View 1 (cartoon, helix red, strand yellow):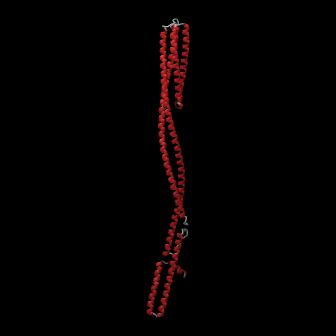
View 2: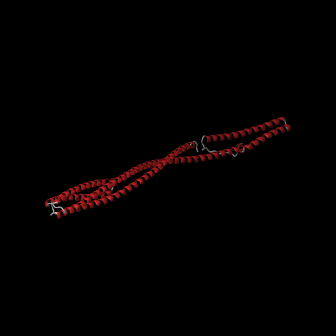
Length: 392
């Protein structure tokens, strides 16, 4: 009996329906034939028998189909609940079993897809977290780079301001040097005039006569004044050397040279004062030499010495003028270099400002990337949560 039931359940549903229709058809045909050929009782009994068989097959058909449908509903409810781990096996070879096998294939496909989605979502989550961390590190790096470029920009601006100050100080030093050169030139002119005056005194002394005592006293005074001129010449030479050293160093924007220039002017004033005293002494000599005819040669010799010393002073002043000219040239070169350095520093400042703008734009892009990575991480976590509802 179990064998026949199992055999019946293996039949396809349409085959069962055909068998049921054949059974009912035989019932009707047999009832008609029995009603004509046999007695009424036999006809009724046979009809009841076939009706019972038809009802049996109908109930069996309903039971088998309903049982299969209930199983399918249970499987689908399990899948709806997210449980894809339950195995689905088709026990027979009919339409219901085909549907069950299709559902099993669908569940297997869904399980593979969801498993792949889960793996991909985990990879996306890891990648998004890593991208977020990298973006944060890059953002921190760009912030540091922006701060450093800002510091460099400020330093370059300060350097440009310092270069401008150097250029202005060099120009001021050049002006001071020019004024010192002019002052030294005036001193040289005064010395030349003094020399010429002494030559005229020498020519006039030849026509004068004075006493030997007065001429000797006046000559001693002339020697003292000439000694002063010699000291001034020596100090002027030292100051010229200091001016050359200060110009070579060109340190502290030429301030040292300005000090030297002031000293040169002071010495020039002393030279003027000394030569004025020489003139006064020479006038006195002129008054005294009228009575010193016998000492004319000695007076002429002393005047010649004074002229020689004056010539040396003039030569020293000429050397100072030449050295001041060299200093002016060097200060001009320093000024040009400082101006060029200022222009270069300005260009560097503009370039650094452009770099700062690019770094800031990069920082904004990195921040946007970090925000997108955060959003992606949240979405991947939500996807993992949704996929986690399925049991594989």
